[in-house]
Length: 526
Image (cartoon, rainbow, N blue to C red):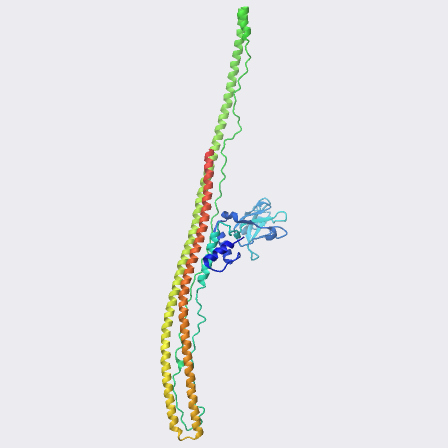
């Protein structure tokens, strides 16, 4: 996945050289962010393993070796059937045919095992997969937190924080290149050229420069930089959304219909004929009696139809009331499910906030401790410099005093020798005089050579003091830079945490809105 834009942003923030897509800080930031967010909220970044590349069949290895050491597994399936995770100590039960925990083709099970390679953990599924019934693992792929991801800024800030932390650690000054000069040893003043036993050689008591205390050594303090805390983001599982039932009224009883009886139509035309034309009262009475009989029969049938309709309608109304009550009870179950989910979601948000607040507190504690350590380092540097400067002043005064005494003693020794030689010279032969003269010249040459060593030592001592002062200034400047980079590291780390928090909160709000909409829809159906 492309991280070119992320790398460019890191360069613009930190000023370090350009990073590639495989830069360790970017990869570290991607992995850290995946570990900081509940895996249920990163399903868009999921990737499936391939049997040919990671195993999961007979030909390529029955166990799946995860490409990264991750526990962000979303699902494990065997032959299309989702597998259930079991603890490692259950591995014997799920493969034992005599166990109630035995895994089957329809209900497979899996567990995690230690890695046998440097890639990641192993997923072991039972029943053992085959070439026709393969295993595939759906996991969160950290490489998808890239240039096009909503968490892009979190990666930039986390990687930038690591860069600044590295820059802060690199500002500790190394004092190993400073070497204090060694004072020269006093020469041995001898008169080997003089072999006459009756000549008493002058004794020269020259102060031994080597007896002076050595130059003071600056001891740099040790910077106790506390490594950045390893944060553990252990989030609870996201609560499962309830399924809202359809609360429409449905039952098999048909609506009753009233069926009126069929009445034979009375022959009123014939009756009228007997009245108007025939004027036969007996026939008229017979016809009227017939009509009354038909009307009576119709009324009786009407009563029967009415009674049947009333019976069917009573049964229908009773069944209707039962169905309505069932629908209301179902709606009540939905309300209980929604309320339970809402309570679980609130508890989940509370637990997530506890994890975030706990890590924020740990970050603040680390920053406070780190500032104390850096300030102590600055104080130790200043204290050690003060001790060094005081010792150096005493040492320089001692060197000056011994140098002056040495010069006085050398001059006095030369004068004494010259006087001794002059006094004895007259009574000696030419060879002895020549030996005395050579001895005196050698003595003066030794004095000059030693004086040159003293001057060179003084020059080296001044150079050492200058380098020590330069180092001291660099320490103060580097310490200030370390403080700046440490503060930048903390700032960008907190920005990264804020991005992660916003992502989690926004997704939680989306879940809440979805549930609210489902609950409202359920209420409208009622």
